[in-house]
Image (cartoon, rainbow, N blue to C red; front, side, top):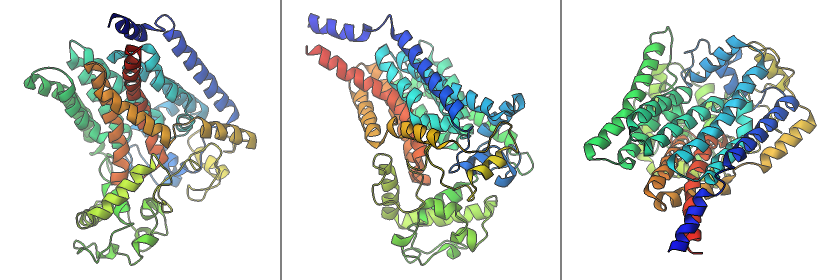
Length: 487
């Protein structure tokens, strides 16, 4: 037993003198990689997600104006872009800040794993994923919400991790609640995280029942204050939207439109016109029903995304379809969820989300209103200088596209990370089980919500992957301890 204990102790202490140097070395390599990307790849023009980018930038082509002018997206990221543009409207400046925030995310997740008590070598796992993942680089290099959302999420995870071992957890929890609320203001998919993680806090942190409830309140109250303040600011503005709840009808309708069969239920009053005769097996995926100009919603009904009454109509129809066709709904959700691990599972329908080939540095496929890369770059010049012509050399596209294809967490590695998270939740010391469950619960919440409410998209998987990598570190530690204990 003494010998085994020595091995375990050695496992935790190994690399103690040098681990910080290892982290700084990795961050330095990551910085060099990002500098090469900035030098050799066009400044932030990606056609496939150009429709989203123009909305974030509030360009004229997006038909969205004002900070609170978009009911489908919160104002956090557009506000971030506006602040950076006020400092300097040179597009590479914004891209540089986003790349630096990506490196900061790596440091925060490393620090979060360390804060729970894992050894330094294990804490390097999430840092390596964030620093070197080609998909992470892609999102940082584009005008996309993840460039800000991932750092804010990483900060929230660090603050929650600090609360696990803190003598005065309430201050860490309060700060974490505020950070989680800020992440929701950047990306509305984070709306549920304060509630989900308040439950985690009540179960994971020690104390009597009343103390556990207080811990949950320390997290929830600041989150509610921040989100409430955001609504107070957004709503009074003429035509203002929070971007968190107003587009729920369209989102849920796009989820059910591929299978909704009006012969199986009576459509709510005023929604029968949404019924279609196309056999479900021949229908396209959620993105078609929500955004394609040829979809019935757009072509026949002239749907107005900002019309609250029409959003409510879509919501009533979608809920009726889910209630009366629960198996079809469950199958649709299940297939899209499995696609995060097996992208081609279930023979995906057209317009069922972006895959690896489309979210790629090498892709030039038109998507944003059928604009070419040069045309889209011209739209960017409405807000930025230093855009260029929107194209990258064939060599740059090939090199960075190949890197992204090779250095990414694919479905198999994602599954491995989740399994290691689960191992960490049931093995090791109690404090490490709490850390693993934090990252597993957070990551799974963010991975499940998109297919439940809308669709699969590879872009949705990147932030959860970072969290699963942090949780997987505890699974590796648990396995390492058991191996060391047997030698």
